[in-house]
Length: 80
Image 1 (cartoon, rainbow, N blue to C red):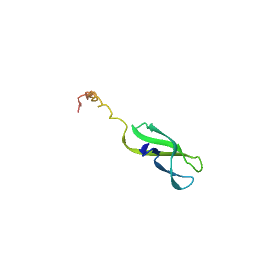
Image 2: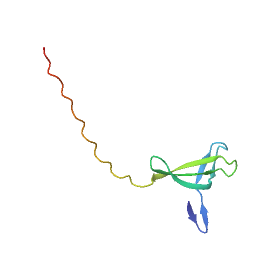
Image 3: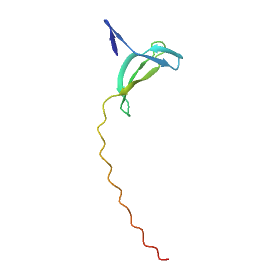
Image 4: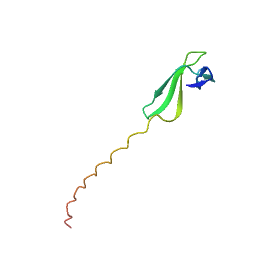
């Protein structure tokens, strides 16, 4: 949600029911499972849920710990 002058500007999204780009009403910013930000709201005309993925990640992910080395299994010596 951005502010323009004294009004708040809600981002536009595509309504699949109306098949048109419209302003998202009652938009709430959410974080998806993969860490990206998105806005979820309703279409002003038909009330269908609209969802728009925003650019960038919500927060930098903590660096993952290095994986433990996989132990090698010893092969029995061949008897040929």
